Image (cartoon, rainbow, N blue to C red; front, side, top):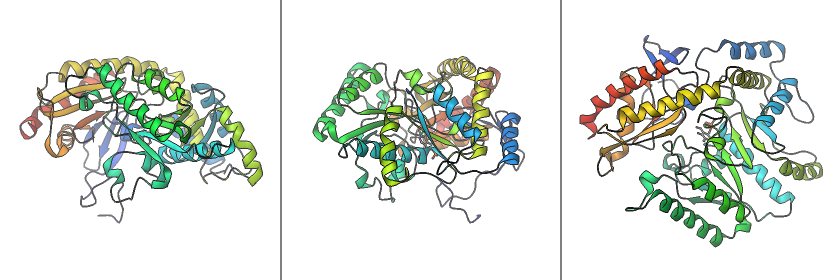
Length: 443
Ligand code: PLP
């Protein structure tokens, strides 16, 4: 074993795969095996693995100005261009953008800017953040506490008490419904729970609610029809800001520009990373509305600076990568392509797997999806120990497809946006073979 503390890895495990190169939607390991990257790395390599234009944009920038910080009045043109382009794209009025390096630190930046803003307007008690059970928002101190997945909390003394985080139900009807509850009844019940909690806590102490429009790491949960409309009405009624974590759903993933568009969310705050640069260079963006930014000006003047920033905030090569990525999305109509092949992926997943004895639910939108693996299709009984996903992932890998197990028994799909219909056919044929061979060990 190399002396690496591997992230999100069982530390008793030895290294499993050493990747050497990529091409289109494929990656190749050091033994010459070729795999379809069915999860676009970690839900991020939207343009696949050999986009020469993005690589050229990065290398050109490195050859011109390989670094510039953006503290204390310094700036550079790629940063200005990227901010203007992104601000014009997002459904946030008069958007201002703080740039960082990862989805996690972008969520921490949001957390801090919310504190800064509410302190500035004389409401320091408005500090609690609502998050959802099963939500994933990253692993830094604040983001890690906003995350609800047990593995990200255990042994880290998380959530950090002082961060004042409230948790509400995950909007997953399939696993969360009670008895014969309809979807509408499920939505009304979990939103009533939320309103009860808001009133018990006092709405004046709650700043915002963070949400992934469609979740990723928690199992690709697509909330039922009507959930977001009612949720937003509830939050607005109580003066709680809507904070959309679009780290996975941003930029075409759900078949529209943003997950907010697909799910009918009007956000106040938005978080981006991953597909912002097709993951070719680390960059994240924390988007805030102009009315929030304007209130942050006076306290920064009082202190002398807005005292938050990373050495790599607005790194020139990262900005160049993101600018080129956004240009390609637009020029090649990749969101339109994702919508078309996404519809195909969803239809084919349902056609092939709805009747499969291991599959309890097929869910997703656009180019993000999951199969919920069950031991009993009729009762929906889960696979003991949550080992379904891991067994299926191994079988898929043996059949040349890399996927990811999420929430124990779910098998997640999130291929590069450039995937074609024949490539989807090839991927699903391989996955079907893998699930057929896993059936005996999982039923
Ligand atoms: N938010 C969401 C919705 C994510 O899926 C992730 C990562 O998967 C993050 C935040 C954290 O991003 P990063 O791993 O870049 O810190």
